Image (cartoon, rainbow, N blue to C red; front, side, top):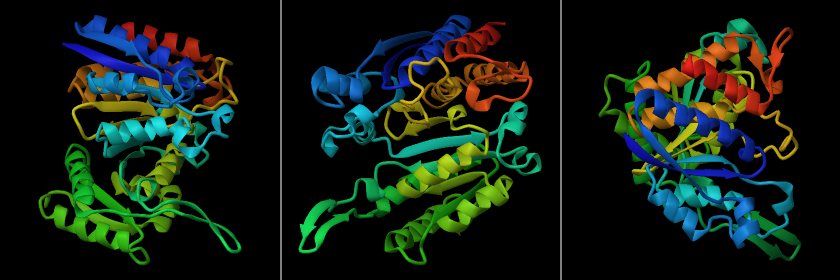
Length: 357
């Protein structure tokens, strides 16, 4: 297999964690006889500094012409004063929109070696294996009208939550199809008791479910879901929800595993998938060699599984991560008494060593 990967390290710790993931991808290629050509591109704040825009046309062309995209993180305080359309985060939204990436898959699965790292009791989080399927290109982040306007008494900020039958149908299909490969249970999360957009969401999800009689479906209001994730997370298999609710709930689910730095994500929909850790650019720790690269390395495993159907290769990465953690190696965000603390680069090298063992 010969594939081209667009590598967009981005800003902050993205510059440190992405190289570790690329090393793992190259090692997988060598071990299993694949060729992965990694081509660097600029996105986010670094692109603004170099070109004046967060998503240069050259970067978008690179992404479109590649077989998959690996993204680090974008953003930082030095660009927060820019007008909204020029901020680094527009690169992320632009890639999602232009590549047609309507589904964001965010797994929250705890490694046995990290049971003590969760802020919840061991008996609550042990065995959790949740997949949040977040709608990614609709909802309040993209709805119009939106803006800030002047009023007689000050200003008024407004955003519009909008969903269409087509948008809900395709994300529901994704959730049910994914559930068939797992434990065949989908929880659709909405706020149908007060929001018309959620009322439509629930109606369409029910209709799509008729095509998947082998998958169990239940509905849950978002506030109850937020509570249940802390109270009894093992009840969940696949959670499907809107852009805004998915953004919030997936971060909550991430913390059940001990650190947001542990978790990967896949953005799917068109022929080119985009893979990234769910955390941000973390400018406060950038350049200190203390960021956790595991979420980015695990994103490579998702790339292999979802974009290239390389299940064995993906499982090899997961085993290498598990072995590394079982050996007592930790980054600072998942540190525990008696553990050996490694820097970003050293953690990447240790996982690579266990992959090659």
